[in-house]
Structures are given as structure tokens and as C-alpha cells.
Figure 1 (cartoon, rainbow, N blue to C red):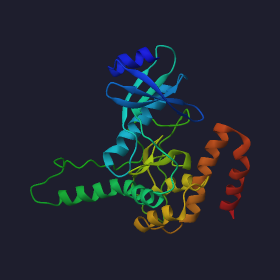
Figure 2 (cartoon, one colour):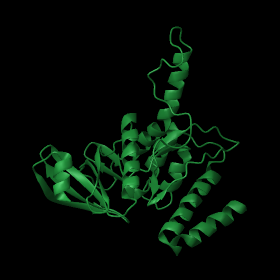
Figure 3 (cartoon, rainbow, N blue to C red):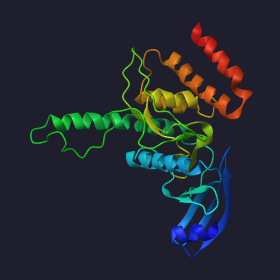
Figure 4 (cartoon, rainbow, N blue to C red):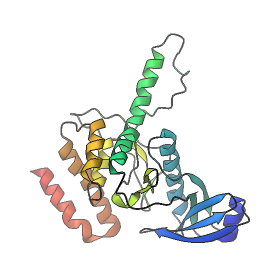
Length: 268
């Protein structure tokens, strides 16, 4: 694998740093290269390229908003044996403690970004001399994403859900924002391991509230920018149910009781 990495990255030096990381389905290792330190995320399953292509597209989409820090992706590389790697910027990260409020603000900015672009586009189209098709503003008017993104190994279906009591403008989401996918470095908060798509901003808070790890300053800062819409509490449960059912399917019966409990609450 290291010989393939050297060729694909165009580096003579590829020295393991001793920094490792991983999760349920991937492992990772940091390396020093001729052009700096990188983190290499590794998976040996046949679905790895689909998964990493989606993660790279997610990171690139979030980066373009210039709202919240993510590792800069470098390249997806197929291994000579089965599997694939995703090479990205190495970040020295620690647990999120100091920058919870800032993360709440930046997450709201991420969710607002597409709406602001839509508003800017509409304003430009009403300006004399600026017709449709002439704008440089990039906007997304449909739910979904331009690449398949995965929950674990399962590609996510991009099916829009509309609620009659609330206006939903497609927002760019991290897609898997639980406490294990946030951290901080010296200059501020970091989010990573995204599975992005354009959807309802409230979905993000459904995942965030499932396992804890986000304090009151995070939520207060977020809702100062994006207030709770009518019916928020019920939709929050619904979005949590979606994720509990995913986890039940993906990881087993440990999520059964939580799933059933939420379903009973929603039926009351």
C-alpha cells in the first residue's frame, strides 16, 4: 500500500507518524510526506471507493462554504488489492470543549449558506443588466446531493420530505454530526467524516442529540441564528427515529428499544 501511496501522491518520503485513528468500519494512519503531513483513511471492502468518493465530495462541498473547518481532502486512491484509501489533510485535534459555542454558530452558518446564495441569486436576477444564467452564485434548489454518500456502507436514498407547517430550504448538511465526528484544534472547531447532502437543517440536530456531547452553549448559539420552527420537537424525534432505525439495521439490537420508544411517543 505504501508504494502505491508514494506513486499516487508523488512523494519520496512516506513516514508513519504514529498518529492513528479509526471507527466502526475504517482505520487510519498519518504520514509525513514531501509536501507535509497527511491522514490516510483505509478500508478494504469492495464498497470502499463508493464510500470514499462520497466523503471526498462532502468535504469539498463543506469547504466551499467557508463556514466550518473540515480536513482538506487530497485524493481517493484504489488499492492494488481490494479496497481503497482517502488521503486528506492531517489535523491535530482534541475533544470539543472550548469551542462548542463557535461550532453552534458555524453549523448554523453552514445550514444558512445555500439559503443566502438563493437570496443573492434572486436579488441579482432583479438587477438591470443581470439576467438569468449570468450569475456566478452557486445555488442548490433540490434536495439530495451530486454524489452517492453512505451511512456506513449503505448508500443513502435522497428522497425529499416536506412538512406542511414549515418552510424547508435545502441546506448543506454534514449528514452524520454526532459527538464522535466533531473536535477542535488550536484555532477553533473541526467537523469530519461527513456524509453530506442538501436536506432539512433540523435533521442535523436530530443526530446531534442522540448520544450527547453537545452542551447548551452549542444549541443556544445555533438557535440564535436559526430559531426553532413550530413543530420542531416532533420533527426532532422523527429524525432521531430515522437514525435509530439505521443504527438498528447497521449495528444490531442495541438500538431496538430506543427505536420502539420513539415510535410510541410519536403515536401519542
